[in-house]
Image (cartoon, rainbow, N blue to C red):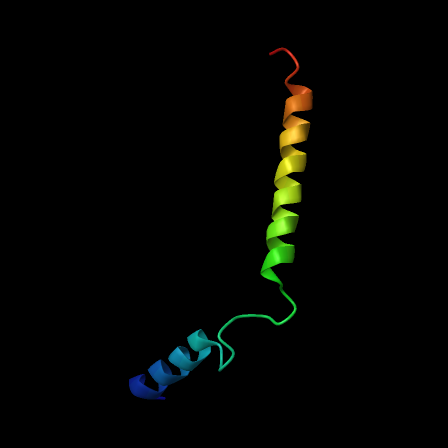
Length: 53
């Protein structure tokens, strides 16, 4: 393989094809809502362990 064909194949691999990296089943609202719930749960747990204040 020459350097040019190796570079072309690495660029094609890095691009990930023609999809662009977005998955159809991932909704931004569900992802954001899940992250919010997890962070609120962690905040609640942290405040339960820190009762001396």
